[in-house]
Length: 123
View 1 (cartoon, rainbow, N blue to C red):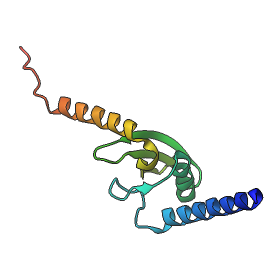
View 2 (view 1 turned 90 degrees about the vertical axis):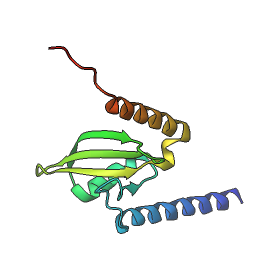
View 3 (view 1 turned 90 degrees about the horizontal axis):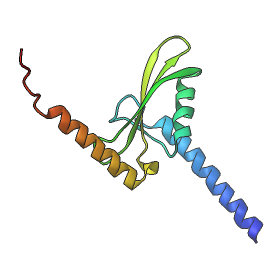
C-alpha cells in the first residue's frame, strides 16, 4: 500500500512539473517586463527558462524588486553572441510573506529617501 501511495505521489509531482514547464513557455508571460513576468516556483526554474531561450549565457546581474504585493527577480544575461537580455520572474510563491514585507519596507524607505528634498549647498 505504501509503495502504491509513493508511486501516485511521484506521478502527481511529474505531472505538476510537466504542466508548470508547459505553462512557462506557452503563456503570454514572456519575461520581457514586470507586467509580463514569468511565474516560477523556484530559482532554478529561472535559469532553466533562460537556458531554453538563450542557450549558453553568462549572468550579468540580478535584482530583487518588490514594488507592490508581489516579488520579482530581474535577471540580466549576456548570450554567447554578445546580446544582453533582461528577464523578469514573479517569485512571490516562494518568497515568503515576512521576507516580502521586509523587502517592501526597504523599497518604501529607499523611495522616500529618493523623494526627500536635498539640502541646499552653500557656494
